[in-house]
Image 1 (spheres, rainbow over the protein chains, first blue to last red):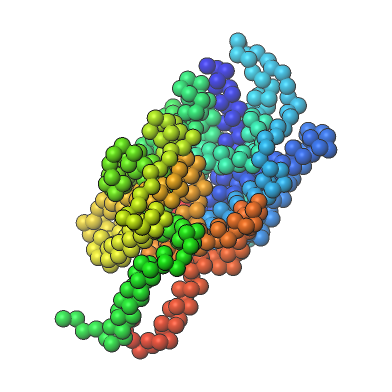
Image 2: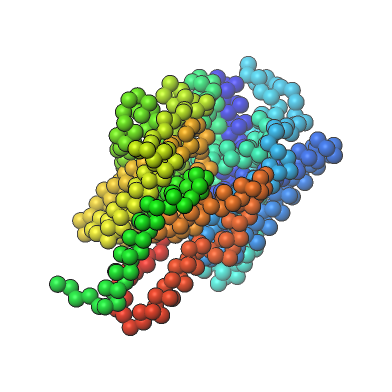
Length: 286
Length: 337
């Protein structure tokens, strides 16, 4: 049981990070970004390429992936989102769907659909009161937690407060000297980097191929919805819960029921709590 | 008796002629097309029917419901299953569509409480859940291995032509009914619910009732389209009804304009034809598809059809400058966030 929960938390960490990236972009720029996971997929393949072909050190490769993710976020925001964002909400949604197709097919063209693995330097296991925990699972959970706390702190910094202000009201903060393009750029860069980590973590949990993003985007949205879309902590807890529920269902019902159960959870939760769950209540309700 | 200006009469007459012309073309066109082209045209009609459902639920009632791929699949599987158990195809399609409408109502009821994004996710999850059912309920659906479909042939028409006539006829009927409904009480109330939900309550209109009915209509159309789609595919697998299909439906309504009946047809034509045209690009198909979407949105953010519509409006305005304007006020629809 505890074993199942821990591996659920490991998967959930990737979901949670994807949810954080989605919430970040949604809060700052009001865009539901369907291309978020694909934006993480390209950097994740960069990480894989660096490690397996150029034998770059793991930490350096992941750092390069982070930079690639942030850069991709900036490029997407500047050249694809910003030109249409004032036009209509539909146009932006449409744009992210187009990006989803384009990025996904770039990955498929370059690397095909055969599964790859990103080797983690964290091998081996340790035992906590009878439960065997792999270092890899522990690392995934810790990374997720650290990023969540980091984001939480970021929203208390100057740039973060500006972002929150812009999310509340588009006009007044600009009168007070907040530069909207800069805030958007920071949000998309951060989200791109977080999405890259999310995909790398998901790939380490199973495999990396051109399908990885498609599962992750759905679970990311589901996790963000569970968390109520506005709170960082909520999205994070939502992601972890989703991972645990999926794993429990996979173990105690059937392997194939895992994703169905998590979808059922989101439908049921939204029926009773139309605004999603927040923080601790999420744990109890599920 | 209402006095109509000559311009209005002329326009009515022109649209009548246009409708008759389209119907005549639909009847005779199989004689001039090869099987492949007719198949493509049939596919356009099927997509248009499914997306008319989205026009009602997303365009008119303003609810971003993304479960249509699920109802599409339900129509395909339900009809094929009943058909193979001795029920005539038409009755089977009708029974399945009514079942879909009931399910649509059942999810519409709680969904009416959800707003914007939460609704989108809940319905997306529900649609995906139906996909899981198709995958898992092997005794009925054949699971991932798929289910063969018995093909329907009307008289001596042959299967391809029969399917075209069935799809075209159903599309024509749905367009006629929806067009009529859009200018009667129900259609207006639906749009009132979308635009000013708070006010509808004080007028004694139940917003929930209209939303749930919109869900039911949408599910019904989706299911019928799915039944026809099963005929077109001849062999159905769960992967035919995945999230990709939802995205395709979204592209249709976004290209054509989400609250226009013509939008569903034009958008469906755009999607099917562009996909077929890109077939020859092989591995690059998805890339070209994605890039063309990006270019379209970048330079025509209101959809391809916005250009056509605005040109058409300008032409009309030039032709009938002094005429009384009896066009509807165009409401703008936005995805609530």
